[in-house]
Length: 451
Image 1 (cartoon, rainbow, N blue to C red):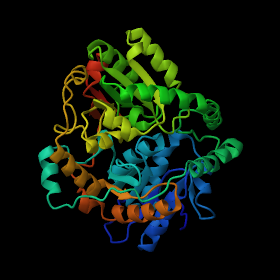
Image 2 (cartoon, rainbow, N blue to C red):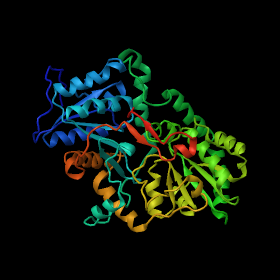
Image 3 (tube, helix red, strand yellow):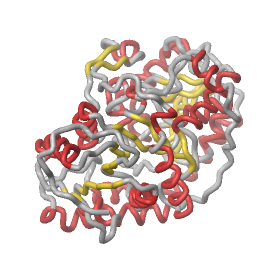
Image 4 (cartoon, one colour):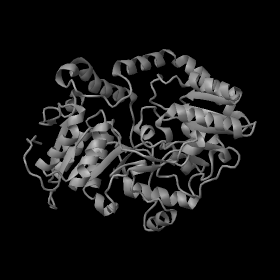
């Protein structure tokens, strides 16, 4: 892999069998380097941009393009980089980070293909690789009849888990990524702005405090789940996402998870049957800084439903889904788990599974009393098309899953147009948030940028 300087070329890339890939930020692991290796082995050219020491460190001694400029200089810089190197394809983790959103805006008019990498819609052991964007920007089919049609020639996917995951390795990689930025970032890349919501030191302090409270949390979880799971009273499950997730910031009504949680609590208190209960489950990698126990407790008390609403951190998600009367999500991958179990599901944000026949299509107020169950045949068809079009086996952390995932991603992005032909490559400027009016009394359409 070689780094190249900028040139004055100002023409779009010519269509050739050899493609030129530009890789931007990926997960905090060696995953993107392995993708690059696979692309090079296939005869393609690969370039990479490092924005900080954490980006660079997982690439070892390989040459790389550095961006040391101010954030305002990035859009012009990436456009020049694309022209100079005749970049044909961009690959990045998520479409919401500012550097990624701006790169997409710059690249599409220059004829580049865009490939968005994310955690899989199926957990564990799967990765998502979509062209152009995710959720509200996704080009995955949105018509149930079309999904049924496309699924007819596809086999049922094998969803059995293959890999072992390790939180210890995840934590180690996170430290390897962030500590050099904290220690030397002020000197090496002073203009770099983290995409995360808090400073890494603050985040690590949250994990330490969470570890200190783990015994109390375990006792609380056993008490709450014992009450909810053994009772005849129905309960609804709301698995929380991460507050700083761009799926919330960009693809959820209001762009604020706490605001959404408060609105759901208010709706439940007003419209749910008096014997129903609402259970929130904290995200597995939430560091505790969101203080969900106290915040949800305060909102529940204000709504007059404190005795019917609870929060747990940990526990079997599948068991909670199976025992629930229905699942509330924004656009989490928990949605696909609920669909496969056959539970009623409502998606409050932009999600590719928020379709008639899969999710509850009426108001949230009606979901508490008459939740719509998914059509099993449409669920089967959806899963077949989902796996065939935008899922690959693999992971970002465990060595075997990284090896398999990187090879699968490299193979998938070299055949992307054959799987999901590009019809309209323009960036969307208006997004529909179906439940925003009901939740917040605000217009359901919004002019938004990817960033």
